[in-house]
Length: 521
Image (tube, rainbow, N blue to C red):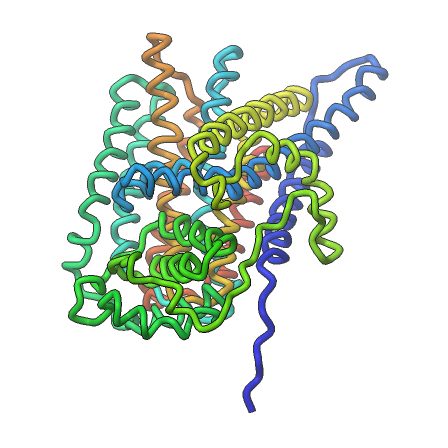
């Protein structure tokens, strides 16, 4: 007897993950508020007046996290992907540049905002602390939750892991070198940017280089058919045979060459899934279903757009629409989430054209520009609130980077977790590549670019707190080596137990950081 598996509610899952991470942020802020030692004062009225300021600061910061998640997932990533397509930028280059900005925008703009605001007080460590903390979230939480939510063993391709590990370790090394003396000078900032340029150049030859390495046995052509079915819930699976014949998707065909997974595949697959929802014709629906499956399967093949016609479709398909921002979704938890997000969703709807919709696709440049403006503005407000919260309780900005790292990592975490929950064979590669690839971008561009601009404009070096942050860099390297050892020991497979171990490791890291802050050790 065959048991039909109940479809998984992706919207509900995204709400649960988002609220879970925000709850963790709230707990950390509550710990800060109840155990910190603010500056002593003899004025009882002044002391009492701090309490509502502290509460409002916490709520404001959390709301900024929610707003950034909405604008990045709903607008920024879609605009970045459309930009890559319209400008005909090679996918590998576009994924490492334009789409990487959309995926890692929260950390990048937080770093910029912290550097701008911190320059006035001489304390600009918040952005760097956020990026270093985000690196731990990307390594342990993203990979861990993806393994747990997958509900099965996920096979990992060692080739992109080798690539991402090399550039990530290189990023950690140059970060440690730059931090060792407590100041960032011009040649160090230039080094960050040049290494990222080399990463982009490598990505232009990514497939040629990695395809020379032996292919893992667990990768097979069956993955493509499985992933296509998963992407479109079986609605276009019957079209696969016809499309294979038309687009020459055969072992000998030009279009079936293997492609190693990179972190941009997460963003690109999600983009085509969104386009699939608003496709206006069956032809477009098939195209985006196939493209989404392609990015999950590690293949390259001809798009053969002209070969996909409405004749391929048996019957009419009913396209799903993106739910209007003013319409509450079903379910109690989802309604609460919708109500909380309503004000900012309204603001986005009236100021940012949704280029995921066919009739607004030509407005992608406006979407891209307005998304940058909104993320920059929200990041500035978030950093301002964080500095204000820290000033009220006399908390070092280095430690304030802990909750900011969790909050700004929500978009990346959601992408990886939701794809892993579908159980696709490419989920392991995307989770790991998303985590490490995002870290490469955050460290080299999120830190290096703002430092370089600041040094050039001001004509002097940037001061950093090397005492606390250099140890965090050592921890990053240690965790990275440990993760690689676990992957090797487990045969490059991700299991729910491995995922649980990673999450526990992150909790232990949090406990250590908080204990260190309060002088427990």
